[in-house]
Structure formats: structure tokens, C-alpha cells
Image 1 (spheres, rainbow, N blue to C red):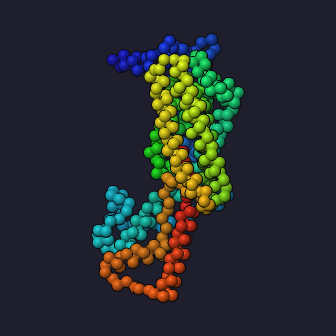
Image 2: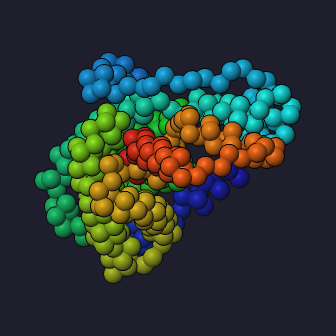
Image 3: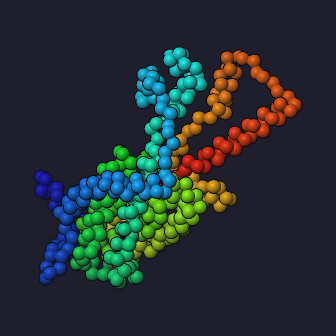
Length: 399
């Protein structure tokens, strides 16, 4: 039963154009072709990446962070409170009015406890820097390794050649290692997702990683390797710029960060919204129809490509929104996906206290004349300081 099911799933007509099949990928005359069992090598490679990452962060990232002046301010921890902790973990990260009566604390004290407790769970700036520096190092090396693999290949200059003699295209050693290392790295990202910094596009990132792993694996199985290497190179072209911009952002190098972000935005738009859809996807989705009758594997591969392209459009919208904020002269480009650490200011606590007194029917103090104007000026200074503080707690977009 299982044997019959396997035969149906891996039938030649499903994964290959008419007249071709798995037999075409049998080694012969000194020519080597990709094999399904080769993909098992990516699991130990992924674990090696996890180990190398820990060593890198301790020996390179942390000293580099210290050299660039990356530091975390001391966070005030929320005092132990079983009632509030239970509500925070099981119900909501924002308080409700009844908690004040249950704990015997004032509304302002409950709000302050929740604010501090939320800040405790937010990743530190040093943690973000370590993660960004690791990814920057990999993406930079992967991009130039990809260039080295492809620079002398004819299909790098004429994309239509990725279908030349398909699927009987022999596997080159450089292609083998490029594939294994890239796939191993993305698998390691899935393994480390629980401990990595989580942003608002966490679900989109998971979809991206899964689609990328499926795309790389499938392209290996059916020997779409020429197209796969081009796709990986296009993705790595912008990623190292993004991670380096984040590193300088955490270090407080605002002008350098903004300059690199501008470069990243331009490269991202060109590679993900122009080169990928109009050159590569066109060559994998439109051009093959002139050569072969459509088959399931053709639709499956291009379906995964479309998923990635939708995610690219989603991130491009976030990038453009930040560019719009950046152009008028903001101090720093804000990440639309990042949570900002909440601050504790006298002004905020005063507002909470005034709201509490208002609810309890306390008398309001009425100010007139010079006193009112002085108060308004003071509020303006506090409000402006709050806006500036918001700009200093940002990070650059991750795609």
C-alpha cells in the first residue's frame, strides 16, 4: 500500500515535463546529479550553524558591540506580585480596572507594574545586535560566495539558459556546497526561532523561512538548481545591508544607519520587485510554457515563488512607509515591526495620577494667566522630549 502510494506521489509525469523523469537524474559517464538523500546533510550543517553562532556571538559580536558603544540601560524590574503576574501571563499584558481592588494598589501602581513587566520581556539592545551581526556575517559571505559560484556561468547573463538541456544538467561541486550551506542556514533559523527576537511580522517570517526551505529543497530534487542559485543570490544581495544598518542603529550611529538603510531600500526594490519577478519568475513561469506542456511540479515551484513575492511586496510597503518618514528629515528610520521600550516619566505618571483623581471626583486645579502659560510650555517640553526618546529606540526592517 505504502509502496503504491509512493509510486503515485513520485510519478514522473507529476514532477517532470513529458518525456522526462527521475531516470534522467541517474549518474552516468562521470556526470553527477542531485539526489534526495543529499538533503539529509543539511541537518548536521544546521546544528553546526547553531554552534558556530554561539561561538561567534561570544567571541566576535559582544566585543564588537562594546567597541561600537552598544549598551543596555538598566531596566527597573517589576516587584513580585502573584496576582498581577498570573493575569499578565494568562490573560493580557495590559491591566484592567479591577486589578487595583484585587491587589490593594492604586491604578497608577498597577499601570507602572505592567509597564515594567512588559519591558522585562522585550529583548535587549545587545541581544538584537548579536543577532544582527551574525546574520550580517552570513549574508555577506553567502552573497559573495554566490557571486563566485555564478559569475562564470552563462545562465547568470542569459537567464533563459537555466532550462538548457533540462533536467539533464550535471551538478557542479560549487553548486552542491552553495545549496547545502544556504539550506542548512535557513533550517538553523527555524531551530532558533524560539530564542530569536520576535517582531510584529513574526508569522510572515515563519512563512518566508518555510517557503524558502521548501523552494530550495524542491529545486534540488528536480534539478532546478540553476534557477535556485539565482534566486538565493538575489535574496542575499539586500539582506546583509539590512543587518548592517540594524547594527549601526543599535550602536547609535544615526547618519551611517540612515545612509545604509537608503542603500538597502534601493537594492531591495531593484532585486525583489524588479529582477526577481520580471527576470527570474518570468523565466520560470512564462518562458517554460514555450518549451514544455505544464505539469504539477511546474505549478508547485512557481506557487512557492509567488508566496515569496507576496511577502516581498508586504515588506516593500513597510520599507516605503519608513522611507516616507525618513525623507522629511527624521532623526532615524523607525521599524514598523518593532516594539519600543516604554518609558517611565514624571509626566506620564502625573497624567495617570490626574486621570485617577478625576475618576474619584477630586477637585481640579484651575490655572490662569502666567501660571497657565508656564504650565503649557512645560508640557510642550516634556512632549517634545518624549518624541525624541521614541526616535532613539528603533531598529531597521528585516526581510
